[in-house]
Each structure stands twice: as C-alpha cells, then as structure tokens.
Image 1 (cartoon, rainbow, N blue to C red):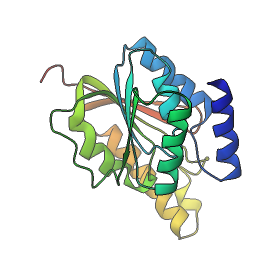
Image 2 (spheres, helix red, strand yellow):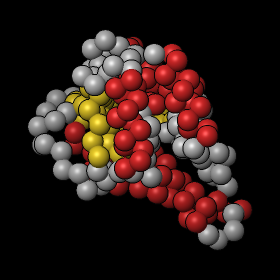
Image 3 (tube, rainbow, N blue to C red):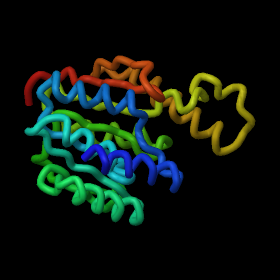
Image 4 (spheres, rainbow, N blue to C red):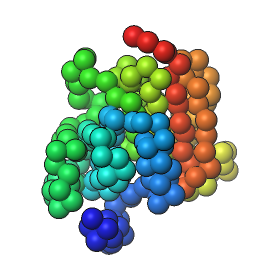
Length: 199
C-alpha cells in the first residue's frame, strides 16, 4: 500500500496533477477515525490519492468519489485496483454538477476538492445528502496564499478564481445551516458541520 501511495505522489508530480497536501489528508483521516465516519462522498477524484487514503483510514469506511476527467478517472480506477480497494471505493465518471444521485443516499462526510470556482454550487447541490450532524470539508481555501489578496491581483483568470474562493468563504461564514471552522492546515481547510440533528 505504502509503495502505491509513493507511486501516486511521483505520478502527480511528473504529470502535474494536483493532489491533497499530506498534512491535510492526515487531518481528514484522523477526523474519519475520531468521528466514526462510515460513508464519504468525494467531489474530485483526480488519480484517487485522497479517496484511497480516506478508505484506508478505517476498516468500515466506504468512499464514493466523482471525477469528470477521463484520463484521471482511468488512472483512479487503476490505483484503486492496485490497492485492492474496489469494494471500499466506488469511482463515478461524471461532472459532479450534472450527476443525479439517488435521493436516499446519505453520507457522514462530503469532501470537496474539485473545480474551485464551483465550490458554492457543489456545496449547495450536495449538502442535502448529508446525514444529520454530517460535515462538508473543503480543501485549498488559501489557494497558495492568494486568497485575501485578490485586490492586489491584475484582472484575469487568477483574480476571478481567487474572488470566487473568497466568495465561498464568505458564503460559509454566513451560512446559518452549518457551523464552519477554518483550519490553517496545508492549503487551507474548512469543516462545515450540519446543525440538523434528525431527518
């Protein structure tokens, strides 16, 4: 398993595939164990790095992960098989904003690590698939130190993207359905806990 993780890290560097920072995934793996998380929905599989680590963090946890890029999807499937986790990880090939999940599905944890400009849309679409008291964790909220500095950036794609992430942070802070804490771990994480106690 460790050997496969190292292979994935090497592949990510060589092929310029963004994967979660080690401190961030270590925090999430610990969260899964400490909070008895059994079901995870991940938006943005990439090559399966975070899904594999989340699935291996506890013997009872099952992960569904969604990826829209075909090359990354195929790489993710290959890596899941290499690690022998086909029964614990379900990889879905589709754009997460177009996917229609069964209304009965519920998850203890939803992890958002896909197109940063769409974070608010992902949150709004998938929050109803949480179990009561479930959490939504979002990665890359510092975005390499650019977040909070958008006023200093020249107009363009980077400025627009940073402004969208800043807008998402404001959305989380003002969202009365969730209690959100922000962690200065890795590239910045948010943990949003649904206040609803029961369905």
